Length: 327
Ligand SMILES: [Mg+2]
Image (cartoon, rainbow, N blue to C red):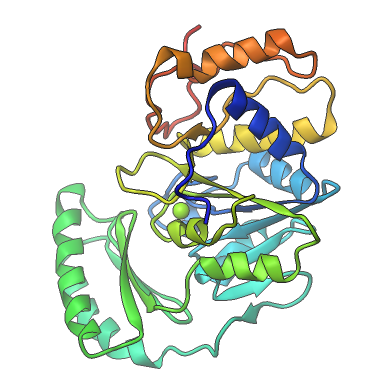
């Protein structure tokens, strides 16, 4: 477990990320929605940009790198968005389905049965909320509130959670998850930590992992990581996290991953637009990554550091794009 030790700050943190980016073998496991693409009313409406597609292509085929996308999406949806990228490992339904080179493989026997009664009772309640919908997955069920009226979403989620909790009282082995504008019921044993186990089963000796995600389901993956791995929370969700690092939003995640790719391929290392910052960081000037990275640029000939890095201010989520700090 790497979650209790303090993440290095300043110059030490910048050197740490340069070392991590250049480590071979390296695994990158990333969530999709809210981490690489902005949320949309339905997952299938969330667009994978050409920039992101190109990044995933290049990173998946980079020497010494294994790249996986671990999502809560159904496998059809994940495959439709990313299925044509050579070498990209896919995990759908929080790791319940995995796809390497060939066909999708389930981690446990697929079963829809137990949730049917719950789905029926939820459907009656959902009908009162225009736009809301229920998504059935192989093992789980999700109530999506995002397409409903903003003023009604909280009430819908509370009502759905109450019905789900009543059902859970008689259904051991399942659990409720509160996601971003959704509530989901799934078997307790299907967690994103399965993604970690699956990656480790086939990991080359000495592999280190960077795991990125925004949602509460990503915390299971963060907690599973080893001491040589790095968990990065995307977005400030205002909750306790097992991540050691944070990035402010989807565009920053993409920019960081592009920098990882460039750091492995190029000399001198290009300026990072965004680097993960320590979670629970102290806003002391001496700890400023902006200052420290600038100093690193001055003392090393292997890195050129830009002053458009985040300042010592606490990072806020950027939903519309990476916002360079003044400087
Ligand atoms: Mg997500």
